Amino acid sequence: MIVDAHLDLAYGALELGRDLTLPLEEIRKRDPGTKGIPTVTLPALREGGVALVFATLFASPGKFPDPEMAHRAALAQLDVYRRWQDAGWVRLVTNKAELEAHLKAWESDRVTGLVLLMEGAEPVREPQEVSFWAEQGVRLIGPSWNRTRYAGGTREPGGLTELGRELLAAMQEHRLALDLSHMDEQAVVEAFELWRGPLCATHSNPRALLGGSERPLANRHLSDETIRTIALRGGIVGVVLYNLFLDPAWSRGMARVPLSVVQTHLEHNAGLVGWEHLGIGSDFDGGFGRDENPEGLDQPGDLAKIGDLLPEGARAGVLGKNWLRWLRSWL
Image 1 (tube, helix red, strand yellow):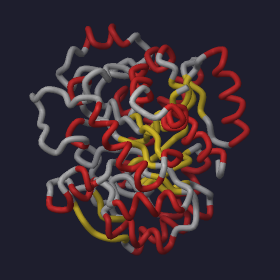
Image 2 (cartoon, rainbow, N blue to C red):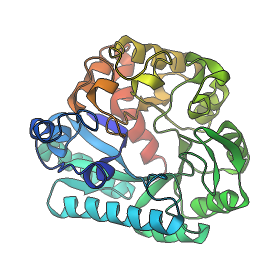
Image 3 (tube, rainbow, N blue to C red):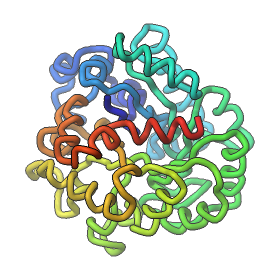
């Protein structure tokens, strides 16, 4: 059983124009690589044993530069997930009872469950609107992608804004989880002072293995201290599988990084916090494709290969059970 804590499924359907209900090979024939060779479809998730995905609502800042546009984009993506559910392709999971029912049904039907994650909080037009999104089924929010009205983020440092503090308060009130991925270190530190709810980093790697704080994109990654704090508060850190986020010397056009580099990142984090706080957040379809992922990770079922790199006692947890334990603790 695999749990993948970060896939941009509706983004791929709407912004990349892919019919994700088709088999993966069919998608590759239709879109052979102009936007990255596709790695994910709904049939491929089912065939690959992916029981649960944290599926994003992601309004790309470049395309949706203001909150009203971002709000409409997120609603359109939400509609995609609901239509897929109506057609029997997925099951939306919004609480613990639905999670347990889904896992029981998955044993026989292999329908992938979706927990909704908002990546970048710009679709939340004002903090009071958190209640609306909670009612729509969103269960996690990451305040940043790059800098937002709420917090500093990737490439654009800064702390929490006053609106960001209000956002966190509203999220805690409605028992949503905080995703620290993409948040700038200053914003993370300030969030730790305020936050008392469930937290995680769905798709982030250790900065210590990526050239430290002086490298480009350094604030996209987690300090060792942040990784420790996430674990101390019961959270999970999901390893992200984009080659550049595994090897800072990699660039597009180079050979794919070896799968062993994923092992190195996981072992680093395990040395800090133990295996029970680690999982996968592949971002397989985050605007790039097969050749931007490590060697051998060509489709969702290949995520099982990561388990083969780990100590026997850690495999099931990292592949999915750690994320399930975390969800059961608060969902």
